[in-house]
Image (cartoon, rainbow, N blue to C red; front, side, top):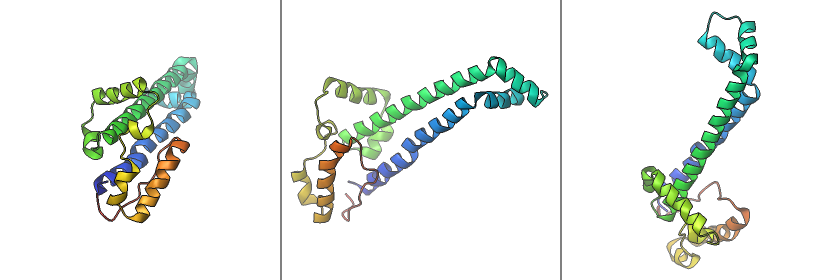
Length: 172
């Protein structure tokens, strides 16, 4: 794996996917406290209102509209996370992680998910076009090969990817 791809994958998890999770947490908080946030919004639109007037307006439907907006934004975060995940999986499948990810379009992401839907019994290794262990062994150190072997055995059981990508001394 190229060092640039390794750095990208770590950043992808820590920035992009965590960003979606944090955004949803903030939107949920705002939705739960809809009247308070709706009153704050009403006062921004109409600065002359007192706090009591803004709260009263929020209680007559503005809070519900605010909650509906937060729900729509949460759904948007879900869609964005699915698209990001599909782009990442497609990039891994085609072996151009950094470059392919940034150049991927809706069609490529849709194509990847269509492939998943039409091949429900395909294993993760095949789905992502991962090399088999025999082809990896001569290209890495014994220590790295041992780590990769454990990952290949454990990842399907866990149902998720490891959160850090081990670095190699070869840079590829």
